[in-house]
Image (cartoon, rainbow, N blue to C red; front, side, top):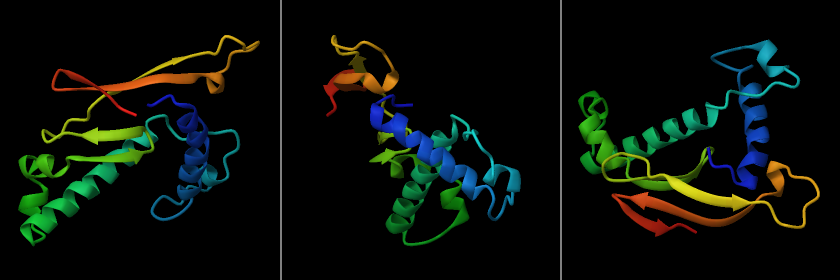
Length: 140
């Protein structure tokens, strides 16, 4: 998960939304919807982004072929190249290459020198970069 301050702060809101939705169809989990001091799984943002990415790939495939065929959308070799995209997901910036693999974005962060207490929200991002096919590039 991207540890930038904005994502750390938005995880709390996302977690509350997930738990609230658990009280609705198809789960009807009343205990989940009314839970206090409980968070959604730390993997929930990744699951969200996986479904979002699948919808992008499916939309691209349908637009390309002009049909909705289970033999197409159940075929990973057709779905992978149609998943190449960039979006800001719940787990951070998502960059998917033509091979269907997520490109890793590295972020260098540090605490400012003038802090008396150190919490994760005090960290400052100094550089972001990604590695794509062995080539390092800046990602702002």
